[in-house]
View 1: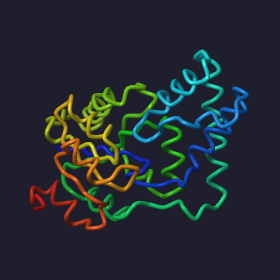
View 2 (view 1 turned 90 degrees about the horizontal axis):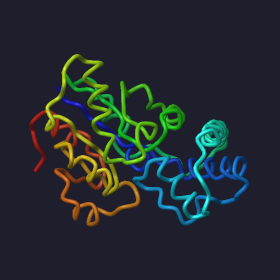
View 3 (view 1 turned 180 degrees about the horizontal axis):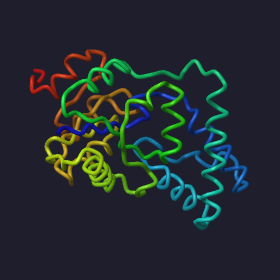
View 4 (view 1 turned 45 degrees about the vertical axis):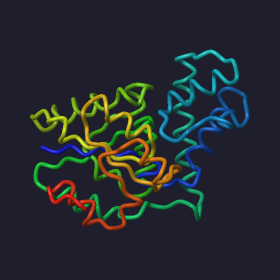
Length: 231
């Protein structure tokens, strides 16, 4: 059994800033501070870690009840923002074709490994028609530390499919150094793609098992999972 765990932002899609704008709006409405995300690193982070960084920047305290209010407001604003056209929104090269073909491979299961809260991930991918390809995942709801997400995804895959995948049959696919780093503690195969904020050279320094500029050559990408490794 092979388990493929895809990051979302920068790997599958580019929302053109839709997520950041929705989060800023919700933050101002719930916490009364405009542009709360300014100066906060987003790429490769989990949503709860982003929120923690904002609170630390503003010297504010975490409150679980208020955080739930914020999340619900964020989901509303995110859905609303997707109703407003943005030319910069796009699906990354190779998708959805790669997902369609991967889903047809025997004993190959597609999941998500993303810092997005699950509902936010669903809203984003539904708007690009991609949510339907994923059977399970690990999300920002599971832990604010991205390095701890892989076991959540593996546990869910084992429960769904009745088999625990070998570590070298778990693939973490993402566009940031953090995606590569989160695969390492768990023996997963790291596949990096330079379609987000990080260049091929920056990603190469993390020593991923495979490195792509993009997935526009779908057949080359698929050879990783059919034991026909690309040169």
